[in-house]
Structures are given as C-alpha cells and as structure tokens.
Length: 174
Ligand SMILES: [Zn+2]
Ligand SMILES: [Zn+2]
Image (cartoon, rainbow, N blue to C red; front, side):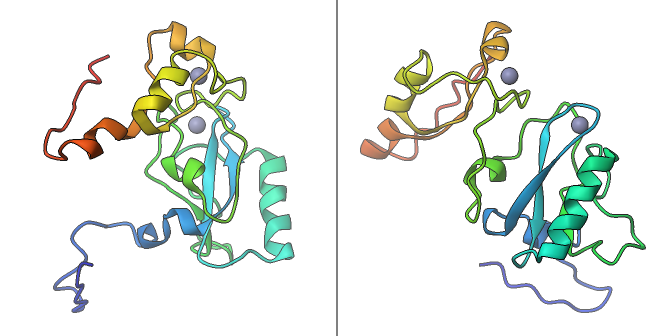
C-alpha cells in the first residue's frame, strides 16, 4: 500500500533499512536453519523457489553448524548472499519468527514459540484448549516454558470480532 519513491539518496523507504526486508514475508519462506548457539530454528527466505543446488548449499551450511542468530546466512562474497537469506535482526533470546508458523509454501513442524522445543502442548491440553476458543491463532508452547510462567502467544481474538475492534485487549501482562 505504501507508495515508495526511490530518489537516490533522498528518500528511502521509511520503515525498512534492511535491503532484504521486503522479502521477509510468509510467502517467501523456503526453509529454516538451526542456530548453533540457541538451537532455535530461524526462517530462511528466498523470493523464488530454491533450486536443488541452492538447497544443497543450505544443507551444507547447516551441517557445518556455522549459523548463529544475527549473522547473515551466506557471507557477503557468496553468490547466494542476498538471494537466500535469514532475518539478520535476530538475537538468540528472541522468539521464533511468526513467519515460521505462517509459511505459505512450507508447513513446518510446530515448535515452542519461546524456546523452539518440538515437544509442545497439544490442542487438547490446557491452556491451549481454552485459548483456541478465544483466539484464532495460538502459538505453540512447551511444558517447560509454560511452567516458567510464560503464556502462550495469541493473535486475532475471536470475541473481538463479534463486538467491536476498537477495544484492544492488552491483557498479556505476564
Ligand atoms: Zn540463536
Ligand atoms: Zn518452550
């Protein structure tokens, strides 16, 4: 929707400074890579379907275990740098990217939104069960994070739609 006029050096896109950020959306999610520090899965983006050769290169990168949150996927001299990439504005304690869950071309295994654990609560477990009645999106959570006092992240309140959108519920105060 935003009209962007790209006058050289005068008027850049206001919201994004990262050159790749326009591609960081759910439609361009292709794969993920595991951070060797925190072991969380970080989304790999590419504007087009990755070739077999590109997938191999990514797999190789994963095998080498060189990726950590915040770094670029491929070094700047690499031909795939800027073509196949990760979000660089990440640090290890950040949650799983929402695009991991909303990926269009891929359906990844559900993992805990907070720590990335694959052993998550099921839809029939509380509090997931109740939350699913209130929100159309309830991010997965593991037992460990729940016991640490974290609440499952939610989006799109179902109640809200019935009544009014104006009343925003900021009820996530721990
Ligand atoms: Zn990490
Ligand atoms: Zn967790």
